[in-house]
Length: 88
Image (cartoon, rainbow, N blue to C red; front, side, top):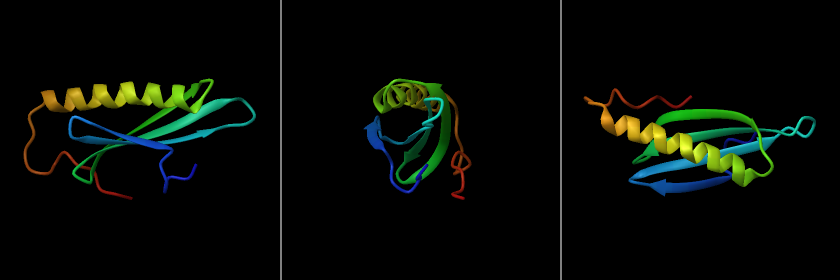
């Protein structure tokens, strides 16, 4: 999977969701990674491995996970910059 160029990206309530999707040709499983960023800072990476029919269905599933994560994040108290994760 090429993590340098996202397959797709979108913006939602001040967050950026970057989707990286690949498909295993042998078993048809989609492997997807979503990066959740705010103001260019990475807050979370979500991974999904599912049997889907298209890239769009895989992205739709990751989108639901991203929106649930950001809603949960917004409901928590935060202090400083402890809520970001360093880039590898």
